[in-house]
Amino acid sequence: MLDSLQRPVAPMGRVPTARASTEQSLLAGWRNGLSIVNLRGNPDDAAFRDGVSQALGLALPTQACTTVANDTHRLVWVGPDDWFVIGAKGKAATIEARLRQALAGQHFAVTDVSSGYTVLHLSGQPVREVLAQGCPLDLHPRVFGPGSAAGSVFFKTSVWLWQTEAAPVYEVLVRNSFQRYVWLMLESCTPECGLVVRRFP
Image 1 (cartoon, rainbow, N blue to C red):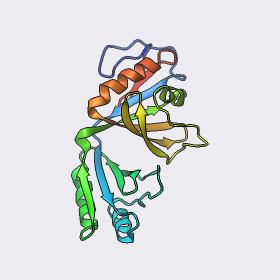
Image 2: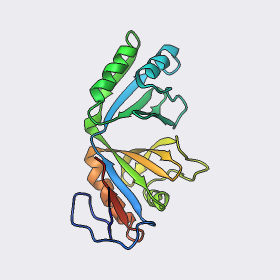
Image 3: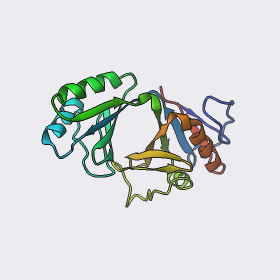
Image 4: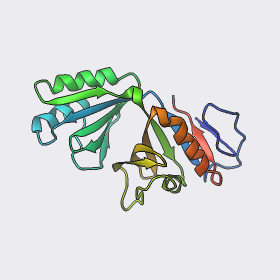
């Protein structure tokens, strides 16, 4: 669902004014409530990798700054022994249970961090230029494409960002306490191109 805006406004805020066209606009929306689980373990241990694959149906990404996904889960490399597992709303307990069962007897840690984070979905023609105003990552497609992920900052808050499609489409992991701040920064970056709010169920 898309709400066309003549100028940026906060989601769930004032009634927007229609634009003539949204083709040049940034599309942005919060995917609030996703299940987000932090996973720690030894990627050099084949049993650990196999257990994660068994639990999630995904090969554990061991290369720095990468992410993999299927229809139900996304695994994001965070550090040499650290990953985010992202799933549908209300599935954190299920993700935890499946990982604990598959990794029983091994050295690992699984923590539900869903209450601390949310995910911002970004797309549209100007998305790279908008992100570049507050994020120092090189997002040129020769450097950062689908399957790339990296920690960085967006203005004054830390974020984790990954690209899901070549279009390009990005998702940005944001601490809940900085959700309003990040949106205000998006507003300040889009006075010319405009901002279209995308609402997710």
